[in-house]
Image: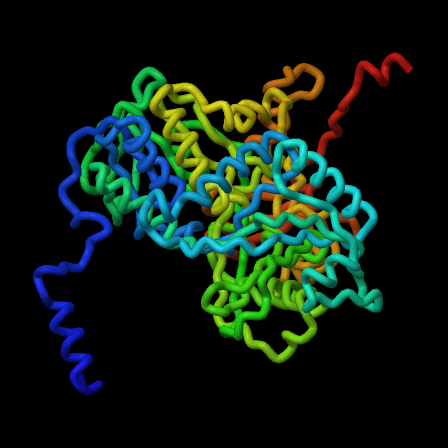
Amino acid sequence: MLPAFVPLKILRYGFRKKYPAERFIPKAQDLKKSYDVVIIGGGGHALACAYYLAKTHGITNVCVLERGYLAGGNTARNTAIIRSNYLTPEGVRFYEQSLSLYREFSQELDFNILYSERGHFTLAHTDAAVRTSRWRAEVNKQLGVDSELIYPDEIAKLCPHLNMSDKVRYPIMGALYHPPGSIARHDAVAWAYARGAAKLGVEIHQQTPVTGMIIENGTIKGVETPRGTVYANKVMQAVAGNTSVVAKMAGFKLPIRTIPLQACVSVPLKPFLDQIIVSGSLHVYVSQSSRGELVMGGSTDPYGLYSTRSTLDFKEGLLGHMLELLPMLGEVKVMRQWAGMTDMTPDFSPVMGLTPVKNYYIDSGWGTWGFKATPVCGMTMAHTIANDSPHDLIKPFYLDRFVEYAQVGEKGAASVGH
Amino acid sequence: MKIMNCPLNGPRNISEFVWGGEVKPMPDPASVDDRTWAAWLFLENNEAGVVREWWCHVPTSFWFIAERNTVTDEILRTYAAGDVFNTRVEFAPKAAENK
């Protein structure tokens, strides 16, 4: 066939009724009067929870209420890194479960999330950071996680692009090497869970903010929305960034400060950087996406804000350090920048499980570590809601740990300098 | 760069300051129980809107109070902490008596 006819053929194929375009989620319908479970928030965590409620626990009379559009918050604003080489045993077990769910994700949900194992390098520039890396490696290995402290000779072999010179302000002294460290397409994770949940009967309502809560005798009865009151036996909130605002409606306070986390991507480059490079001391992390863009992030903003604005200060700080690690990027331009609003907790661990309000559950405290936990949060929160009792993996992350002085100090979090 | 008006040093770059978190009324340290003390330490109002916070000008170690809008990122007012806190708090009166 002549090439000129090909587009027409494709067009005809596209309009044939035999192959209709797939809708990921059914068209919006009216809200029902009541549901078994209402989930506030329509990001990755909320959709994952809806999916596991329906799939694992057979609870399909579930409604997801999203203020804006699906996965438009932090699910769309992270740097898509997945790893489990944390420091605390509680954290390692939790994130390792998430990693194993991610490995099976594309198969289980029949949706390609472009899961790509890259190898994750946390660089150490001081004796203290080398020591913490050794500590993390030993905790990781004890729990079956592939993780090792390596030194400059080996780093240079594995990451030939890195500037290993000692004529820089912070020479590289070692690295915590985590071969299973991966990246994935973050939007696809949310879409896959949304489609999976919707297929099982979950209703997803966008453009539907929760404006109030109905609480009687300390028990949640339902939520108010501009589209009417929705009654529910159980309600969960998964709205990291706005956690305190929603929890205030339910009448309790959290150990959370909302702080912006900024990130940016470069123009697309030919594939050259296989690895995920992170430096806690320099506040840099960088990986190359499947589109060739360098995805770059740093530390959280220096003060709290309910805003997703970007600042020049952030980019100057990040890119200055970046050029020390990868000097050949000097002429490369930044293409896009954005920010997300994170839930920072004092101990860098999440706040999950039961709340002071009966039948009201919370998935919060997602600072700089939320995307990688998406599947395990869905799984454990669904278990928690179905059984009205926290899943074993999230027991250490209970809200009252702060007033009981039982914090889980997670120094393996991305925003923590060593 | 964003400018903050330090009550001691005048307008300075925001990078010279450290954020200290919201001003919360402290329970009486002599009589408070552990849970209430921890709640005061850790639990935050985390308001979206106008807040009153501790800030420190690092080069001079000067702590003061700033009023800020956390939605619009505007600094509304700054003043010395002494304008509000003008009485001394004894943290360990009993220990002091024993000496």
